[in-house]
Structures are given as C-alpha cells and as structure tokens.
Length: 128
Image (cartoon, helix red, strand yellow):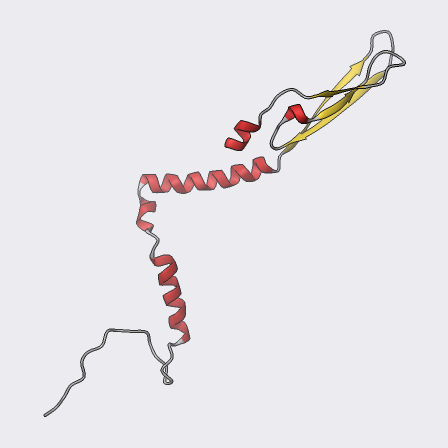
C-alpha cells in the first residue's frame, strides 16, 4: 500500500535551513502595508478629488504657516519738515490687535505713543 502526502497550502519559500528566504519578507511587508489600500477608489471622481484636497491643504498650510508681512507709514507733522517712517511687522496667525508699534507725537516735548494694528484675521487663517 502506498501512502501519499496531503497537499499543503502554498507558503513562503523556504531555504535549506527551513527559514523564510529574505526576499519573501519584503513581499509580505508590502502585502500587509499596501494590500489594505483600495487603489481603485482613486479612479472614482470623489477619491481623486479627496487626494487633491489633501495636497492643497498641505501646500496651503505650508504657505500660510510661515507667512510674515510688513506694513509701513510715513508721519509728517504740520509746521515742521520732520518726517518719520514707521514699519510694523506681522505674521501668522494674523492677530493684528496684539502687535504694538510706536507712533511719534507731533508735540515737541511729548514722547511717542504705543498703538496697535487693527483687525483679527486669525479665524480664517487657522480655519484654512
């Protein structure tokens, strides 16, 4: 009587020592990581638009997060030839009311006044 071995399920390739071959580990890792992704969704309009939304959000945050600007004015008092330049720097998140600057006073003995910019544009910048 001849006894045949039962067929076995296909498994990872084994080396002579019985350990999985090194190339097989890489393919199993790719199957685990990339196998769960449904690449077909990118072919649908909503999936493609979702990818575009992610890309635009990354670039928008990168551009807005490090943005800084500067505004300026020239102050001239009537009756004198003295002109003073004012430069104020601001940046993300654009809470302008928190940014102080020195405004010269036209009176000869008066010191400059501390004023603040007007506006709070942080909500739209942070929302975006």
